[in-house]
Image (cartoon, rainbow, N blue to C red; front, side, top):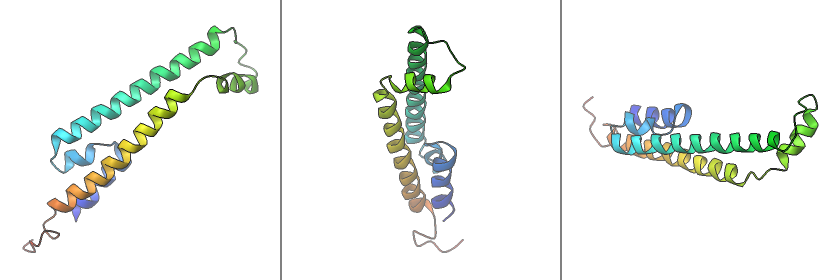
Length: 115
């Protein structure tokens, strides 16, 4: 039961893909880690584009947070939402897959009670 617990916890609480690596499924773990990294970088780039757009449009008064939030709210956040949903789906998949993979590897779950 150790891998069935450690894998999902690491994928859920540390970083998606780590549970697969703990379960010795390196290829899948590295693919998930790379996908998480790509989603994170794409999200940062899009967020920087939005912030740049706000300040390029002539808004520079940082003393009025209400106006700044209104201007940020007027920007198109569709791509950020898409990236967030894609990350959530990948995260849920990584946790579930780490659990299933860990259950297959645990000796007590497979009928091997010699340990």
